[in-house]
Length: 535
Image 1 (cartoon, helix red, strand yellow):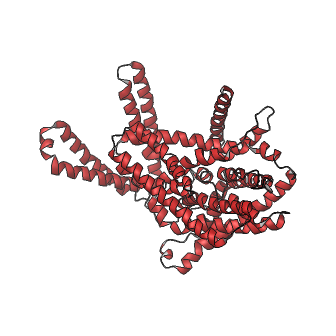
Image 2 (cartoon, rainbow, N blue to C red):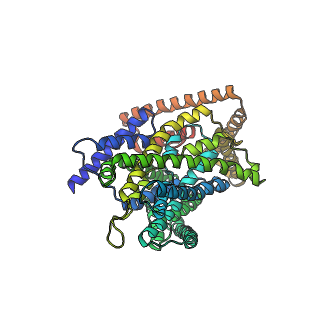
Image 3 (tube, rainbow, N blue to C red):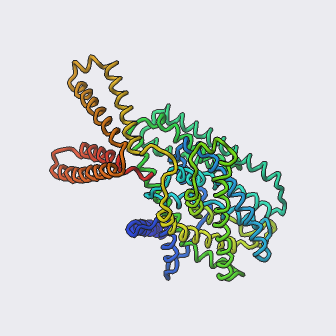
């Protein structure tokens, strides 16, 4: 037990160092961690890692999906439901079908059922990789919403394809009609269980006397509860987690009312999700020696050959699907034409962002070793190796080139959105005007009698005036936009110097640490208004 704990701690420490190195050399850390894990696995004396699929599906997948759902705007998700559905369901089934027929024709002894099994494994892009690669780049909001929405739902559709194909291989029987009806039943009731469970957690958070620590702990428990409840009845745990996460996110303003609760949750979830994301990607690379050792009757060159063929087909199929899916609905529907056309650049980015990840590998590793009659599961080792090759190619090759593709095509915002600074100023102006209205209607007497209340009203009036002027200045050209960026740089520099001053105050030991921490928190909040959060 002590050796296992030491190994885990060393692995975590190495992962954190690798993430910092990835940031220094400006490579998205999922890509760098896979490559680093692969290199570490060849170091003599490094223990051979066995990645338990249940560990991914039960420990990692629920919180990762829940967090992604939490930061997904329900309004944006619903607005772009058509392209999201076409990718998350249509493209998954299209890819699975083509891969099934292709693999069964090029791999000796590969049946159509095994082909659908492989198709279900390799069809879903990773929920984390694309968002991490694209973070910090100027990608249109529509494209990010579609990519994030696709990654939320496609795991459910691909896992359902995988389960039906696995049952067909094990039993030798398959009915397309039964599979189609079961798909809607499994996905639909998964959503129902997720919403029911989310409503229960909503009631607990809102009406019981919780504390910030309890609220944070309950949010960590929620995705596991939703996932296990759905899987217990053999429905989609993924859809339960996603639907529950979207509901809780939409009602979060009613549930988590205090700033301390929200800040506490932010700290807990940011740390937990970072550690999980970093671990799962390095585990992919570390898993290679066991995958190669399990190839058995196949040579590494055969595995690489089939992996390259399948990878090329998967990448090409995404292009073949995305462009028609982006433009054909606009030809058929007047409502679809109300939104600006994505052109050719938007679909290009979505097509190239189809990177596979740990869910595909965990799904492949979850294939049983033996059939129902006790014989070895056919081609299991080859399927796992092909999956690894596909993950490596899409994650490393596409992940490294995606930023260059975006810069090369000079991608710009597709929709006519209000700039973020203008939105922020507009929201703040509405809130301040509401506060002033309340002061005039309810606390007019206190304004006359209480100097602190009077000062607050005066400050509020000045803030409204300043915000109004700022809002007018934000309707500007590129030259004035440069002035705003310079203004932000000045503020960030001032905040940095103020932090140093707080550190000096702490050494003087005149002010309490609690009050200094409050001031630091306010500086953090002010900085977040400019830089934005991790999401």
